[in-house]
Length: 87
Image 1 (tube, rainbow, N blue to C red):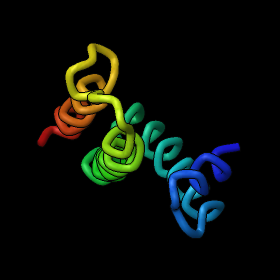
Image 2: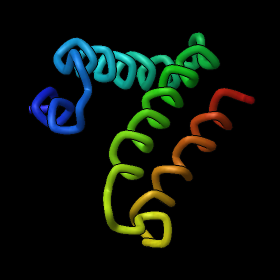
Image 3: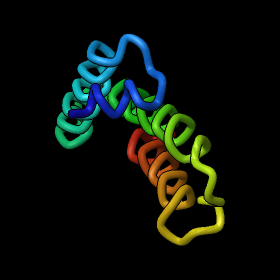
């Protein structure tokens, strides 16, 4: 399901990238919760979020920057992750 969405966005190879993104989010989230290797885990989460913002929100024809739940919500999540890392 995720790899089909990534294919529609033009990501190649879609399946390995979907697996990498999922692993980064899952393992990174667990590591942040446990407080183990938090800066590295947060970096992985930040990278996944930045790629998601660039691939999804900037490709749309709607001005998601001005919507309340669009790009602004995605951009707020990245600094929150950085703060969790102690950056």
